[in-house]
Length: 283
Ligand SMILES: [Zn+2]
Ligand SMILES: [Zn+2]
Image (cartoon, rainbow, N blue to C red):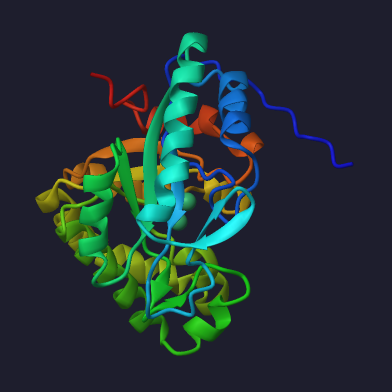
């Protein structure tokens, strides 16, 4: 049996992790309770579950499921109900232990998703909505099995531009609190196109910042890049600084955990980058 990696407690109090997937996401393992236990071990004060909501009808649909009781159900507003109930139950259960549990979702962006997102917000008491750009022309660029097929249809410049335009379009809807993993195109883009992908992104970053600022959409610092061997985060530290200088709210720290032991992953080093990573969403 594989050993569970040790969870080292943070030395700073009142830190929150606002990006994690539990087993309601088809690419994640661990129950909501297991994530809460891990958060307590990490000494986090607050966590927000942000299960995937991928529903683009134009993509191949492989991601378009939510897992409920071990079964993959199509991603619909209705099928999210058990997840919502479960998170709300955990919030009650873990409150006495000093852990605040928030309800969120990571919506996979596609043009035309707005109506469904409005319906989600009307149907459930979400504290927080992330939007993640995971596709170029309705094809996933961030999975190991699909990125080559996706990127082979674009020049480097086209890929980055397409990605950036989607980030701006998502922000402009004003429906989301935060854009997830801002320079996510580098995840496999750097491998496929080379380092130039990051230069292209930096060149276009000011247009993203303008879009985030005018729509009041904030930006997270996501440590998952560290698990893939990047020396920095999503986005890279210099981009975080550029964003802050441009007046973008750099507000949330997220591990993008897909296993309980990822909760609060490498937060120790990143806390100073997000001075208000301490608990949000409090009344
Ligand atoms: Zn994502
Ligand atoms: Zn995520």
